[in-house]
Image 1 (cartoon, helix red, strand yellow):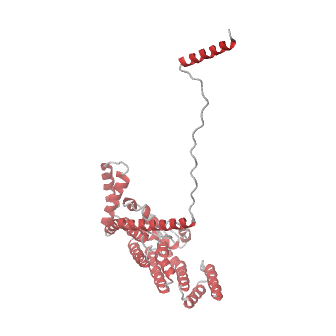
Image 2 (image 1 turned 90 degrees about the vertical axis):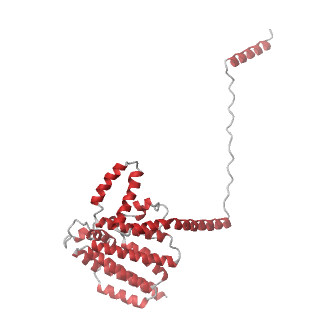
Image 3 (image 1 turned 180 degrees about the horizontal axis):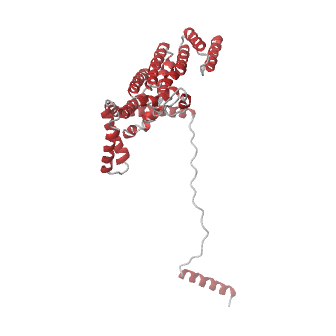
Length: 354
């Protein structure tokens, strides 16, 4: 028999057997198909400039849409802040939605909780005053987020002064509220339940806490903002505070900053005078003699020096320079006197260069 023929017969027979058993001779795997990389498409300088313009226009368009959307929320806030009863009832509605409905709790659970709150919080004037202040400042924050023109910024500044006036008036009625807010004025906090004496005042004042704790903290993170969907749609202007209890930041960012920008010496002086008056009333409202003395001897001179420096920058250099020198001479042991002297020397050096 031809050997070649015999080998061929064996191979054919093996192939037939493998096919009968459903088995195939394995094939070499083919390479996976590859997707060609997308070509890079960098923007030209002209295209980047155009893109920047489009983003700016989009930002204005979104802000305009939000302004229209926010008008209804502003009306709700105005109504809710008009009385203790309305503020409290609105707070109950917000709590129901956020803490009960959204968390799957029953109507019975809410009813029980509500009855307890009506007895405890509903009759607490200080608590309700805090709610009204939160609502007031939230409305102010919404308006501030849309302030673009000088007139709008000025309107917000005037509204901020009015807000602090309301806050000061509430503090005069509620001693504990004043003790909470004083921390934003003197960088300190006072425990409403702790007696302050001449012996422990420095220790007490060193216990710094957020002044806004008396008013609920960041107003854009409040239950009111979440209920009205303002927590994600309101963007504070650069440097603007969202703490309803921080008087110093409210004045610095909302009220005095625009006046500095305009170099309005008269406006700056008037704003500082109002600030000193309102913060003085809050300090007095704590009914703690040592706090009042600390305010008069430490805080007031510091505010006056800042006022004179703003007036100097706004163009009233002669009068402001004389006032700063007199202030330093009259307060040689003030904790900031060395810083004041350095600031005065810097101003005198700049004046010499001019």
